[in-house]
Length: 537
Image (cartoon, rainbow, N blue to C red; front, side, top):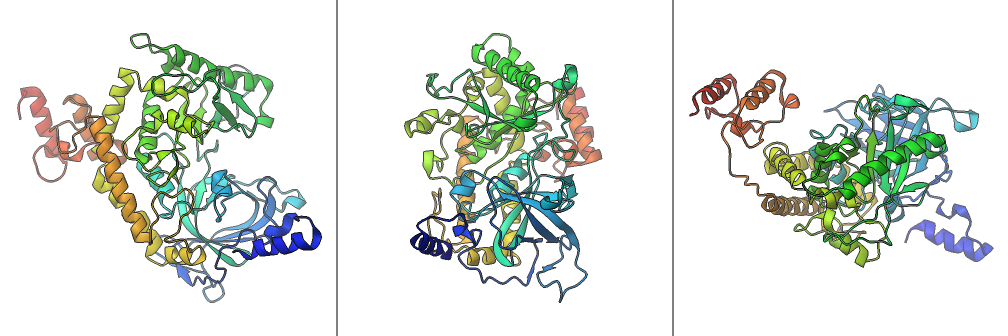
């Protein structure tokens, strides 16, 4: 039992009241004597001088980050190792963050904003480039705890990054708080408006400027929300009249929005929902004026690949730019730490069902937060489903190839093990062989957890392949862009790939290797053009 709990009981006995300071150690790890000499990960020091860190009000803290660059070690003893690279040193406004990641986790996550001086002296937010992720004033330190692999969030970000307009960046680091080693954390961007994030302007007060930008979130009603006029539905179309969908205001903050801006963004949501709710197959798909279909498909692929039990219904972040730039709502991948077979509740460990269609499971277990009806309507539209199948095939031929996903997992795991970061974290938080909410699989070691994750993903991918009629062994020679046909677009995609690299064009490199040389090259362009002109290989 943690010493803080023992102190709380003693304090309650002596005074008859539970003083707010009973958690005086700021939720220190079980083992506070873990030593760190050197590490391949950035080292983050936070000093609060024993002051309690709150969940609501930010306090002034001092932060220092040592990062000597990729491939170089970072040393905790800065006196014995002078001249190390200080990535950031200064004041921050600090608080705890998260819902279940805070309340159900012994290892607490943080939110912080860099400051020019202490809050007590009138400090204001400063935009800072942290660990190469670009200047911003809004940062998170995610605390992988329920996810014993510690890689699920970053895995989701990495596999979805090539598809999405914006996906957060994150970096593993090791954290000290008031001199105590707290373990492995993820220094992470927050989904926000900044130039290096979504790059949204502040919405204006009239006309075109009022149309963007905004960030909203499908989530609980534990803060001021806009409640949808439309209820969730079951996979058979039954309407849950006693369940509601709530949208939280994320940018601008609710208190910074004018009444006209609130009216505008809620009307836009209502217009999109009304068109989608009333849509029937065969009618004009006018709801596409308000949602980006490709983005929604890509978001669904991320949620379903991970079988995220909180997907769609919690932390469902979406944004809107100004109409002149793009009037449609778009989703952002976030909060995947209990995905990929990690959750025992709501049948989260299953690999053989669709998360978007689990409202009957959620409702039967009394959860008021159900999946919005959007996903039921979209997945009952043959045109959307056809697009879903094509996008799945595209990604399965590229960054969702099993060998590439497994390589990504191995790479992330190696970062944590190569210089002992995972071992130190496990010393601070010894949990192997023990249940931690909401674990389905109780791993006995880090390797065991990683192997479980790989097995689970293999089964999940196989099931989705079967549902979307994708054969991973079938290669359509010349179908470079994986759209099901061989045409001039494949030539263009291959030329872009050869000129500008993989970032310019997602292609099936095996299908593009028309001359079987082992890799795409200019000879394949010639063969492909000859095929289009002659009709035979």
